[in-house]
Image 1: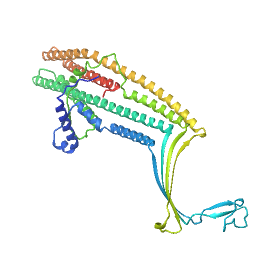
Image 2: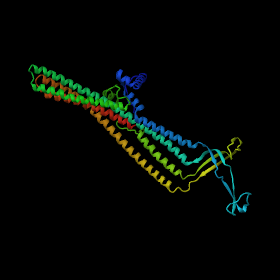
Image 3: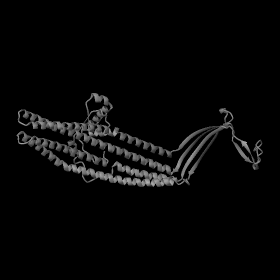
Image 4: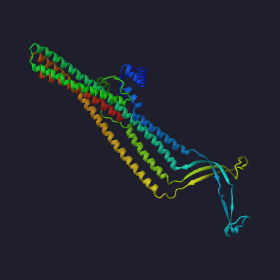
Length: 462
């Protein structure tokens, strides 16, 4: 689903983004010296997708998963280590020789022992430096862990898409809320202008004793009753702008003006989506549930792989020497090396691995239940969004007619009162009905735009 937008050419849009970026980087100076920056919905979404805290966190989690996958993949490469050791023999090691194998001069068991003899070996100082290399040939646990790490990256990518989808949707709806609050304030201000003009007219009439004092009081009360509503509407507009700035990662002290209005957005989007087809294949939450199940299945394979043998090749190289002094230049150094094949076969693990396998099986079942529930929930949300869209569309024409009728009723009541055929109460009631009709018309358009935004988010189009 593609929303048609009215905008300038690509070059102008890029330029406006550069201006917005510059103002964001120089926010204090811009807030104090420059005028308010005018931004579009696309620019706000782009700003939010770059700096929103949820997006930043999702990126960090993705980088962490990618780093983990690289660490696991490193297990397929040779593992090389180097070590060194120095021993000072306080009492030298010995070899034992049984009596039936003969003896060596100067040896003996000591303490009258006759069953064999011992001989001291080595020197006072022992030095050794060695290098070891180990390369896995077949390791089922390592293979499955690598698959698990790759799926974890996909899971994090889906989580990032979820965050982007939610942020974009929240910014769109907050943007429409600001437009609604701005236009609702205009409706109330227009109502106040009408009431003030009516009060001025009645004041003139009263000064000429053409209307009773009661009408003058009613007209003044009507003006004063509208002022708190306007103050509340102004506060609601400020709150809506602050929420939009927070979502779009714009400093609170920066003044912004929004391009567009509810009327133009509604006109460009009223035929945007059919009211029957719903496609949730690209929904990031549903995709994440697929990867969640795949993660649990991979974890099950990892636990089962622990019962499999592993095969590795190894190579060792060592340099060693022994002496009773520290004249290193006179040492006789000996080199040793070996290569081989190492096989590790797990026999018994105290049933702990069996319990892990059972736990992993349960994890797969839980993931399947969560996936099915998420899919049902998303379809319900999509159907509700379509119903909201349909109700809004059905309400538009009656609301347009209602405004026309309310405007005509207000004009009739006003003319009737001026001619002495009506009352001020009728004028006030007609003016109130007109104001309410205009606000209801705005609410219907806001409901349509927010419902369409929710549907776009459910279909994964941010």
